[in-house]
Length: 472
Image (cartoon, rainbow, N blue to C red):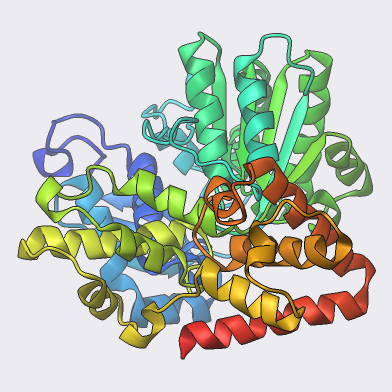
């Protein structure tokens, strides 16, 4: 006979009700970090928590094929993640539960256990939301050219009482910092005494359908609309049902009427998300839509410098040349992957008590030592000077003739793109110019590349030559 959650000592070490929904969400996040976004999105994200009896957890897949693949390849990682979050050994039973909208949704009862109330009044006790990460604050976010607009908008929305942004929509690739910004907004709102409700799109969908199944949609709507700030992450996963899409549109309109704030994150802009109704797409596009791109070299290095603090003991700290090597490796596309590589080398140093070197870091990361060599500002200046028939002193001179100024701007542009040096450091190497001059040069060259195909080919040629030299 199945035991009720929390009635046996080995269900919960503390003797209370086991919040399996929260355990499942935390385990999913741990698996995503361990597996990477690609494998996680393909096989773990579609899985749903169904129920638990003792320490045996029932997990559903959408198709027999998915169930068999997960059973063959990912059972151990799921059980390990659940066991770690639960504090005791967990085994899983994989079943196939095809979602039928709306009444026969198998995962709907999870919304009851998510808030630990079995009498059907879970919506009235509050929606189950994401557990906020206290470390993901605005101070821990590293702004740069690729994400600064989104950072400023998010910070302003969270901290300025008279902020005029009713809806902020942030989109970008996996691991680029969208969830970090939403988490930071929620933390700031709570610090200021405002009610913040932070839901993943899957949470929104599951809890709405659960309320629909229990005939408690009114309480669900009231909980949503009582929030001063509603934050929805991974919106692209919401659009599986016309029921949830319709309810989401109603929620947007209601929050707008109540002058409440709404913040949304997705992997694409509204126009690129499939299965959105025309009215919802128009409603989302009417907010402040901001994209986050892949961070540039200096931002990547700044992220690693910040995250490396406290990772290992002072005598085993990650040296700057290792940080520069990780930041310069294009295999790590996102900040999340950068931090994963950093954590790996720092953990190795801490466990072995051996100081890190560039060579040992390359070995730990499985990279060839020959990839360590990088282009320098001096290399760039020499190659650009040769190409444009100039002397190196021309780059240091105050001269502003087009014959000198344009090649100097090209060299600054390539220095920013191909090295880890900051704008002030680059300016210093070009006759003591300030960082605004370097930034202007980079923007000017980027604009010229868009306007002039021949000029772009010249810049691309120089970039390729310098990149081959770095790898040689």
